[in-house]
View (tube, helix red, strand yellow):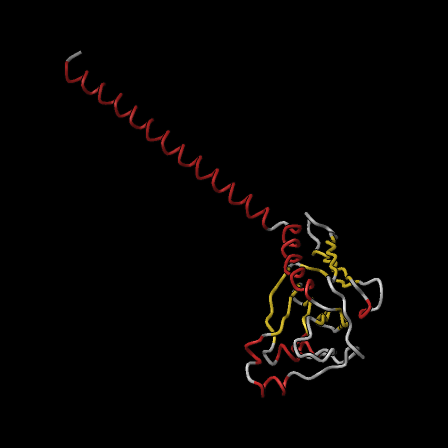
Length: 212
């Protein structure tokens, strides 16, 4: 074997070792990428878990009901189901005004639960406040008010939950006397959560009804 042949063989072995090193390096990189992807998918899966989403929705509603006074009632229509809350007596009168109401609204067509709250910036002038903030009958004056206020741009809407087949609002006594209520979220049926219902109970810290 001459010197040239030995040199070519040595060079071939060096190329092989270099190729193996590159292959190992690339393999380690791919393994790391796959592990990171799996972790990210797992994180998204946990975040998208219905129970986690329900807990987030409950936290938001808890913040609302903690200072709210009472439930005025519930409203049904072909497009939505709404729970009407008297939030506070910001315009002291011991009776509700439009700007003092909040709503939990189930949009039937979209399968979503919404929180609608008064938008203070939309009532910035005394003229607008007097014109669009009537005192209402606590037993029926809120009928249709949610849609009217949203159309007029007087409410801020935040989506709390999606992918719902139905939402039910339940109380153990008539609305004005109820010191607590329950929101039942019925999830859309699928392979993972067929006919699953999540129950979220809420209670008022200081229950108070309007003066009749």
